[in-house]
Length: 195
Image 1: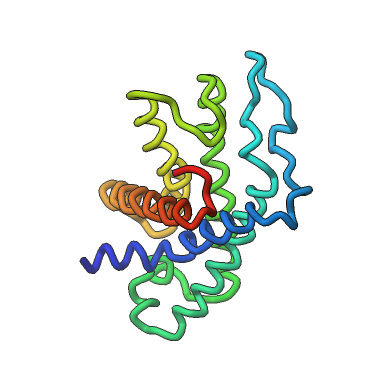
Image 2 (image 1 turned 30 degrees about the vertical axis):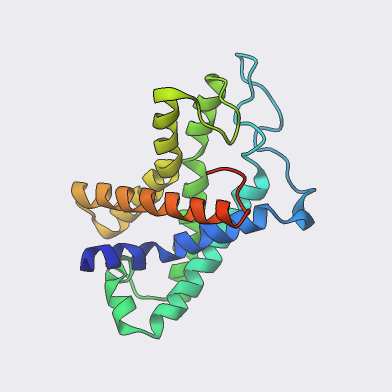
């Protein structure tokens, strides 16, 4: 139970950033700054490279939101010795504003970067952006959709904090399940269009 709490304490900045970015990307105020990362271009197979759902708004939004939320979580953690002690990031470096900002920006950047191969493959398979395929392929991509970005962020955590092989996959499992719960909640609140 302590290890589970430690995972959430360590990933809380990222979790908050994901929610913030989902809300940010849905705001009509920034609708004009919504160009797709692939510029609307097609790959040599005639299909889009990533699709409209991978936009610069989401890319920079997640990076900045993660920088802000990780910094805020660091400030909140300073108020509680327990939070600081349970955060794996603060077991290897001091909880400073600059450290948290750098970690947040790194996590946000890597989060979006690791979503791109999944989008690229789905476009090759002619799967509609924001949707999954039917049958077994649909189940596979549903799982990948929940963990693609976590694979990168947790890899960064593993390098920074010295995770074991099993810790890495435990973070992926817990993070993936948390991602599903958050998506269901945002769907119920009509912030997300699909789970």
